[in-house]
Structures are given as C-alpha cells and as structure tokens.
Image 1 (cartoon, rainbow, N blue to C red):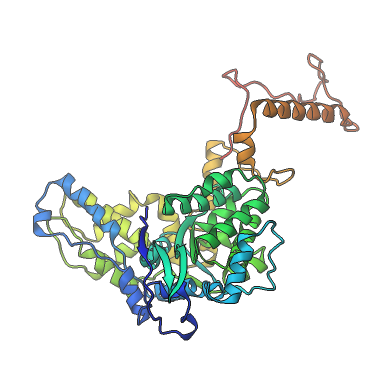
Image 2 (spheres, rainbow, N blue to C red; image 1 turned 90 degrees about the horizontal axis):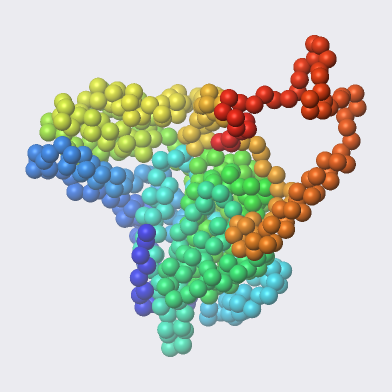
Length: 498
C-alpha cells in the first residue's frame, strides 16, 4: 500500500510556456531532462548476494530468494508509456487553471452540479488524456505504473500563490484497479475509499454508499475529483471488465469517458489482451481512452538484447554455493522454460535455485529443464504458444491463460460451462439491493417472484403433439421415460458452474 505524505506547495518554474502561471503544475515535481532519466528512476536492483549469504543454511537461502522479486528492470518499451504518462498528469490541469476565468467557471460549475446533464461539455474543453497499456500478463504493467507515479504520490497543500490566497489540497495521482466482478458499484466505492484513505479526514465513501443511482454516483465522482484537484487515475486490471454482468462493462467505460471530459482527469489504463473484445464494441469510448496513446509490450525472443540483458541482471543474484558463468546453453534452456515472458523468466530462475539448494548447488541447463517439467508445468501450454509465435497457437490465449485447456478440464470433472449472463431487469446496484434491503422486503419480493413463476407455468400452453406423463403412469412399450433417475446418494442432481 502506498503511503501518501502531505507536503506544502513549492512553486517552481516548469520551463514550458503553457504551464507557466498554473499553480497545480508548478507545484508538481520537475520534469526530467531526458526520457532515460525516467527509466533510471523506475529501475531498481536490490543488493546482490555475498559469499557470506551463500554459506547460510538451505532454508535461509531459499527465504532470501524473495529478494529477486523486488528487482525492476526498465525495458526500452517503458520509455514511451512513461513519457506520455508524465505529460498527461500536467496536461490534465491546463484547462483547470484556478487563476483563469475558464478554470474558475469550470470548478464552480462542477461543484454546484445537481444533475448529470447540467454540465455543458461544449462550453468547457477538456485537456485530459487517456492512455492504454496493453500487454500479456507478467510483462511489468503494474510495476511500470508504480515506478512512474512514485514521485507524485503525495498530497500538496496549497495556501498562497503569488500573493493571492489559494487554499486547497491537490492529489496528483491515485491508483485503482477493476475488481474481479467488474461492477460499476465496486469501482465507484473504491474511488471514494481511496480518496478517504489518502486524506484521512474525509467520509466520501459513506456518502457515496447512500447514493442509489448511477447518475448521482457519477456526479459525486466529478465533484470529489474537482474538490481534491485530482490529476490522473492509474487503473490496473481493466481486463476484468470481460467478467462484467450485463451492460456493466459499457457503463464503466462510459463513466471513464465522462471522467475525462467533465472532471478533466487524465487516465492511464493497464490491461491484458483479454480487454480487446470489450473495447472493440465501443469505438467512441476507446477513442477517448486512448487519446494519449497506446503502448504494447512485445514478447521477447531468444536473441532479443533486452531479454539477454534481463537474464544477465538476474544471474547476478545466484545464492547457490557453486555459482558459475551464464553460458549460451543455459540461456537456451532458460528461454525455453520461460517463453521470454519477464515474470516467467524471474520465476523459473527462482525455482531453479530452490531445486538446486541443498542438492547440486549450481545452476545449468538441466536445472531449467527440470523446472519446466515440474514447477512450470501448468504454464507449459502458454509457454509453448509464446515460443512458437504462431497465430493459431496464440489465439487460444487472451492473457496467457489457456481457455481451451480450461474447457477440457471442466469436461473431465463433469462441471457445467458457465452460461452467459443477461442484463434483463438487472438493478443498477444489485450489491446494495441485496445487502441493504430490509428482510421483510426481500421475503416479499421472493414471494412475488415465486407467484409470478407459478402463474406463468400455469398459463404456458402445452406443446402440441407431446403428452406429459403423470406420476405413476405407465409408459408405452418402446417409449423412453423422460424422468431423470435419482443419483446414488439420494441428493438432487446438480451441475455446479465454474
């Protein structure tokens, strides 16, 4: 969890003409001189293991391997995404300058909004940008976001600007994530809880939970974002929208577009390729959400200089008692075990050392071959697809989880496949209806639903030409009974969903 610290505003010249005279932008950290300086800030290399560490006991050394997980290698592809995000934070404040007439009017109008249609989007142009990062799982999207925004995770306390009173609190960036159910309610409540946790003395979440319509909830988000002078929201795991019920995915995307246009807050979205079917249905929203650019991190091949550099950086963290050189044969076996995925590369290296500690005490190509057939066996289909690079192989995967393999597993276990959800008569906030509705109302609703179902069953006409056998009736010779035999345990036959 990121801990935000309150700091008094210090206004510094930005060197950019359009940023001059904007208190929000001048209070932010200074821009880096080069793109590579951002990468240097993101990269992190923990202390390397010493000979004293290698002489420690087996379990102590295995526990020390957790140090490898904190290593951050800044890939060249990070440069474009980091540069765009750094500019997007500042551009969000361009049209919200509190010392211009337009900025003051915009701030006042949002603060006094009493309906979703009260804001005149044509009268106020938004300078906020949307940015999309789409890459396979394990490619470092979340790590990149944390590295980019680390200097901006604090609350700036404004008191006076150039001799004019200016009392307000500014939160440059907040992190969020689309929850597993991808519901609009969970996303909205998470926003308010994040603001409350950062500020420590607000109760926006409590107020939001009392709101029971989507329009009012979105309206409150605009007001809160305006009140705390929010610059950018980093939203991780956006691919979870594929699990949204009914029209929830479209509603979340619509809300994000409104945050860009009305609140004027920039967005940085992080997702796996599993998001593509969701955004492909909404060209209007994706045009806005990707207005600041789209970044894709490619899978690294065996001879990719970046993958070799990553493997070389990891190799310095050997804690086996007989460390050796990194050879071409080891690199071949290592890449075959990981498929060039950064997360899989670090995982397989850690597993290889765990296996060899207390055993052979050195790492070679055999170590990675053993890991591929043991600890990494469940990822083997995905790794094979990455290694082949063939479209027909990669189509089986969305974020490196084999869908076809999952269906085969369901068939073997006798589980029913999940039926598609329907949005018919779906409440706006079903979680609130279930959690906060009085017991009497829920029982009354259940009785009403049962009565309607019985009435519908009685009114339903019988299918012409088919007779329904009554209990105890004899069946004609050669005919098959439609009654399902009871199972051996005396329990009703149930097919659980997966």
